[in-house]
Length: 201
Image (cartoon, rainbow, N blue to C red):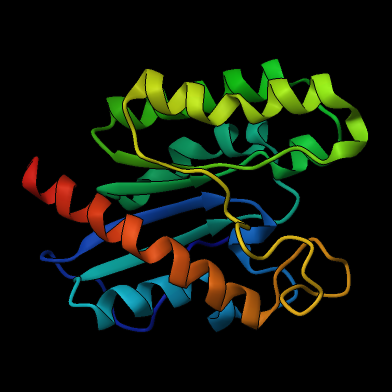
């Protein structure tokens, strides 16, 4: 397993190095490598004048437990920022929301200890596990964002989920058009996140 810079330009000391820790949605399942949202987001940031290099640490099939297990290794790239997108596979498999909460809690704690500024990217539970499961799972992200005082992008697939024009045939993974929507919606928050992080030193 290799981590790669999302874009073609090499990072320099002046650039913000950003870790995108996630699952197949981050890895770009079903897409060409240059079509994954971390790659397209890096291009957007550079277009908007941000010196940023995103390390795509998306691994297809990963749960929150998997992301936690490889976090120390992923931090070997010495990022200053992290975009944490995990939980979709926990929800698809009906795993205990309390375990997903605990795993993400430990990820955010580890990032803070490493002095990496985190932005949490939320997921929502599918309806097939019932209302109680949905309520518990969906509460994970705002609760953790408040606890750790990190910005929250509420739902990665906002404006994309369940739209056949924006998803691959499995209706789980965005196509290239769906990735464009994700980047358009997420970029303003990520840019604020980078500005605030730079201001905070």
